[in-house]
Image 1 (cartoon, helix red, strand yellow):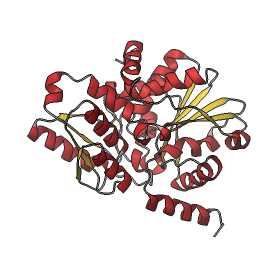
Image 2 (cartoon, helix red, strand yellow):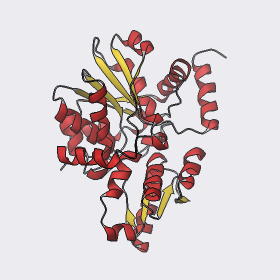
Image 3 (cartoon, helix red, strand yellow):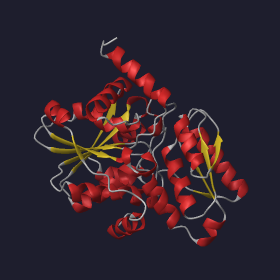
Length: 323
């Protein structure tokens, strides 16, 4: 179970590792939506994303034998860097299987933290299957990116920081992929402030959680298609799904074109680089159907290579008719 004790322990584990990223007020989105909007900029976190929280907590809680075996994971990028850094700091060996389509910056950063990187498959699911096979054949300890309660407890520490810095928060909007972030943040936020609203956001081309939410059971997609590579999963985590059912109030889905528009806004107005998955919570601000609320949008990461940035800028300018 996810308990308050687990969350508080996770925070103590993370104190020497992560930054308490400071909220950023958005006058632009506040005017646009009629709410008071802040960003929680985890794109400014160690490794450039929130994922280091869960990865470090999970690895810290492994027993000596599990650590001795060596670690392996599959990831589209941010969890990979979190595992690599956590392993490096705890003097452990780590192997990371990443889809062949992973942005170069995420591959290089993962290698820079000392992990062995294997590029395999066209998406997360194919990389995951290969990593599980390697774990079984080589006796490595698998670190799942989202379907794990230790991971979720680490991610959930974000809620504690939000409510410490902005105790009047009415709504937290956050990106959703496999569900580790949503489960942790939503569960702890509701423990601390039961009347807070939690809104999860997915891309339309990978909305497996929204479908599962509506069907009241874990559902799989036959395929995924989105520019938000960090949340391009076809099936939510079965261990974390019950916590999302119990604590997330709404699920929204966003078209990729809206992410491109949000990218330009965040870059031009706030001078922040936020990856496509992290922009889901920004694009969703136009769909909240509420006013007068204190809203926090979680910017989950900012690891983008320059080619992707250039492409986003070009497509954004075309989308707005500026070129």
